[in-house]
Image (tube, rainbow, N blue to C red; front, side, top):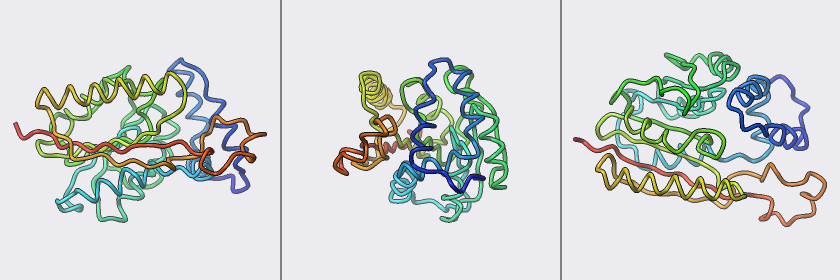
Length: 238
């Protein structure tokens, strides 16, 4: 993060400038945002990484040092930096932005980093290869399609954990995405692909980045935030 003088207004403007529905335009945006990505998210009180990882650790019974972790939509490597503090050592990262992967490479934590645009290209991961599959923030309208969750399950080992952390962004598209996602999660459970470990909700997932900067300071604190959810599933042994 090279710009140490960024403000919440800068961060909010960055979030709001990514409006294109074209996947390649979004990739170019994230390439340009990579150096300030983590700082801007911190300025918006982004709790998704901790929400997902804390819930995962509440339910992880293996040896972190021996576990293979697939970090999907890995961005700048934030997840690996948090998980390595908990004893995890073996990470493979996937992201659609080369700029983000360049930042992730600087952490020195990933054994492999792979470029793939979720939903447009297959998830570049071997079937049944990972003890933990984690995706934070990317499951939302205009980003990773709901169909990606089957690929996450496919990459996990039998008995492995799939952790998904996402925000409940306001608006019709966000509401529909959540409905479609939870319908697909339930369908996969009924098909015997995995079983739910649990859900964890937060009222303070992050400050809503799409609020008007001029009016946001006038809102009560609780209205400035959107909620979010972590979903945790265990892949079936069969």
